[in-house]
Length: 239
Image 1 (cartoon, helix red, strand yellow):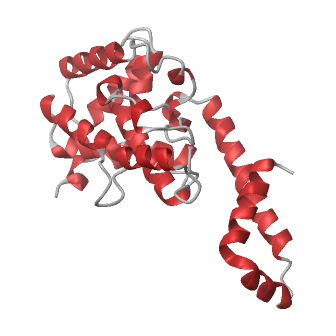
Image 2: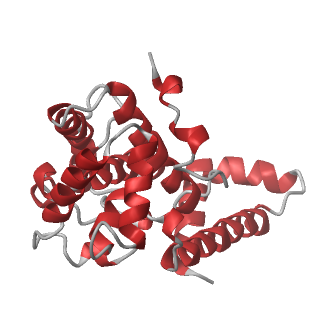
Image 3: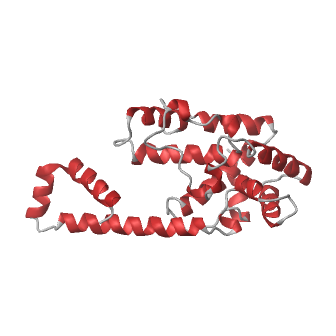
């Protein structure tokens, strides 16, 4: 059986405790088989999503990833990048300027290998993460500032009980899930788009649509498409 499933099953059993497991068994529940089946279903879904992300369509790519993978703004990926930003109210000059800025950021050496994998399924919080090896905000594109925050928020609820202390400290730098988390990258996103002259509605729409991609292709929360007229209507982001 998959080692990860066995590890997760052990964590569940440890949390339930021997007394709780015995009560379930006395009730006639085959707890071992039931948990194994649930975890296997989750693993099968994870692998399916991973395969989808490994061979993504243009509509499955993160927005800054389109700038990274395109050769120029006039090609198919560049045009999808422009289409998305037009949906949230940017003109051609603003789009080209942002495209150039995002492309320049991806020329940095630090995350070059990391960027070769599908962005929507990238993980930033790992057992070997430390505050010292977390990327600097200026090294990250707008989409990466969102996905590192999204990954940290997910790990906050999912992995808090198994992360080493140093990794937990790194997570608290990146997450925005609690009053004591630093939200370093979420703040950097807001500061950057404010300097660029974005409205709050444009920033919120960008974040929401990027997160819809991770929700669908990384976490399997829904099958709804992102970056369409219905999900980018700025009126719904007015506060």
